Image (tube, rainbow, N blue to C red):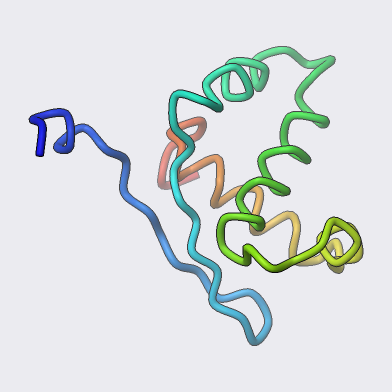
Length: 93
């Protein structure tokens, strides 16, 4: 194992409804998405894509239709936790 392993982000598990969702930090392949969060014109679409990718990681067998039909009351909490795990907002916000 390389020393770079010590630089990996830490995942977090949250409870949404009856489900536990593991939120894994995004890596280099998603760095462009994280940078898009600072662009007001791209922010909404970027958060939607981060939600989709995070849910696909947590539930690999899920379909795009299942993800699209998640109740919005869960999406706000999930999106905030995704942003926290990825350092886009502070832990206490």
